[in-house]
Every structure is written in C-alpha cells, then in structure tokens.
Amino acid sequence: MTQLWLARHGETEWSKSGAHTGRTDLPLTDAGRANASAMAPFLAGRRFCLVLTSPLSRARETCRLAGLGDAAEVDPNLSEWDYGDYEGRTTADIQKEVPNWSLWVSGVPHGETIDQVAARAESVMARALRVDGDVEGDVALFAHGHILRILTACWLGLPPQAGRLFALGTASLSTLGYERDTRVITRWNLSVSG
Image (cartoon, rainbow, N blue to C red; front, side, top):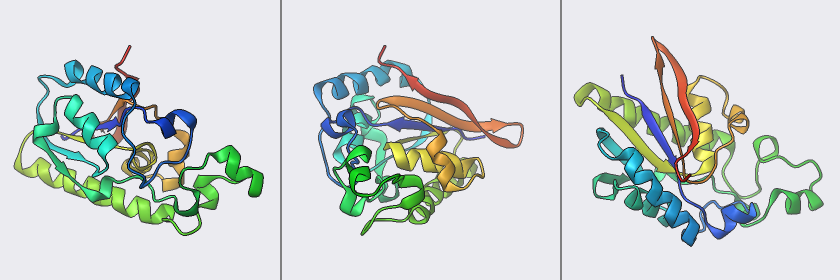
C-alpha cells in the first residue's frame, strides 16, 4: 500500500517569525536551504512513484534541494492556506484586534475557509491513491505546514480542524500509511537537519 511522505518546506523569514505565510512567495533562508539539503541523504534511494510539490518557490526549492526536483510535478492543490487579510501577520498580532482568535476555529476574512483547504487536501490524496493501482511505490508531497496538517487529519478520517493537533516544523518529514487496513501516522515531524 502507498505511503504518503510529507515534506514541509525549509525555513523562510516569515516562518521563522511566526507570520502566516499563505500565497506570498518567499524564498528559503540560508538555514532553510541547508535544512532542505539535509533531506537528500534521507530520501536518496527511496522509490517514489509520484512526487508532487506546491507551486510556491519555498516548496519547489525544498524539493529540488532534497534531490527530487527532476521528478516533481506541480500541484496547485498543495498551495498553503490563503490567509486573506491575515497574510503576513502573526497570531499574537491578530489577537490584539480579535481576542482569542484561532485560525482553526475563527478562520480568516477574505481568504479560504478550512473546508476549502480540506477539499484541496482530499484532491491530493485521491490523486496519490489513484497512482497506487498503476505503479508500486510511495508518494512524496512537498508543501506547507497547514495544508499538510489538514491533509493528515483528512487521511485519518478526522475533521480538518483536528490538524491543529499536529505540530509540524519546517524542513520536517512525516509519513502516512496503514496498519493493516487502518490509515495511521507512521512517522511524524522528523527533523533530518540534525
């Protein structure tokens, strides 16, 4: 059975500061590039029948530095949550105006709803699982923190809001697979940068 390998992009200036980075196309920092490169030895020799990446440069660059750029296909459904009016702002900053605000509960004005993000995650999973019938191998997904956390919740049959329970660091690897016929997390938030 196919395993989904989730690779969160390396560090950017906004991920370092905690700012919500949805559609703003920020480059990796030097540390982000080094951490993405550290994924390469870990992924080397693994067979992936499909490699998908978000269209945003931080994910595509992470994929390239991890050694899978030549095999990657861009999938717009792996783009990060569109944070609308809260793009580039931290949770603490938003909470000064909207006390007790939570992305997972309150959502964002003029951006995507959590259900819209979950629908994109479901599309990615459906695409990955269709491949399983044709070619033996795992699927690598290079993307962003919130979309990957929501995808994980969907994989497990949980509501998308359950993604809030899965902390996911930059330049981390996680795997989703099966225990017998049950979908499970087989590895989570592994830092390969040392």
